Image 1 (cartoon, rainbow over the protein chains, first blue to last red):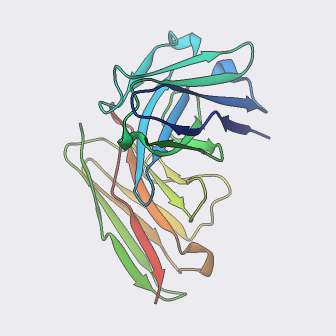
Image 2: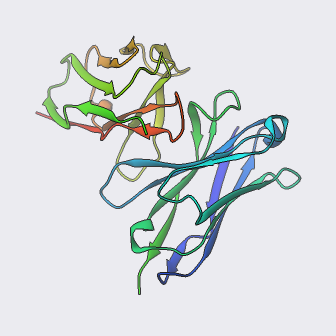
Amino acid sequence: EVQLVESGGGLVQPGRSLRLSCTASGFTFGDYAMSWFRQAPGKGLEWVGFIRSKAYGGTTEYAASVKGRFTISRDDSKSIAYLQMNSLKTEDTAVYYCTRDLWGYGDYFQHWGQGTLVTVSS
Amino acid sequence: AIQMTQSPSSLSASVGDRVTITCRASQGIRNDLGWYQQKPGKAPKLLIYAASSLQSGVPSRFSGSGSGTDFTLTISSLQPEDFATYYCLQDYNYPLTFGQGTKVEIK
């Protein structure tokens, strides 16, 4: 059974950094792209970005709202994906989800973690 | 970025009703679209991929159609467990973008 467990959320002041982790199990982690989404309180869903598998270069794509501030990385030996969030803003407050897609390309998101809440506030 | 315009933003319906939700893309996206269901406090669930393919385990009362710029999610006979918010998501190019969501409520 595929499982994704996010951790690392919490309360952080504006301008500070936070790193989220997504620990995966139940599948060959290295074969899949890993994506991050977020949802601000009471709002809709937003794609944050993703990292391709090493077979596809391990490269990343980001939403414009986080580009240059957020970095996605992966450790295939540990089956963990990371979301490093720097220069946090109040508008980054959201539940953050990591996901795995159907086929490994980062398109249709079949598996989601339970989400971790990040609150950016002074 | 491609804009996804989803309508309606909310609707009230009764059990057994046929429900239709639409998404329009600001440019052609072939059939690179998925539909997701989200219940309060829960992660989204994939219902439809590639515009019209039913995800494994999803009831057959859900169906999707469309290509290019206009897409539709249909629930043929609304069930109590279908009351939720529905989102379309285009994966034609980056950044991936969602529709604003449609909240389906009990009439």
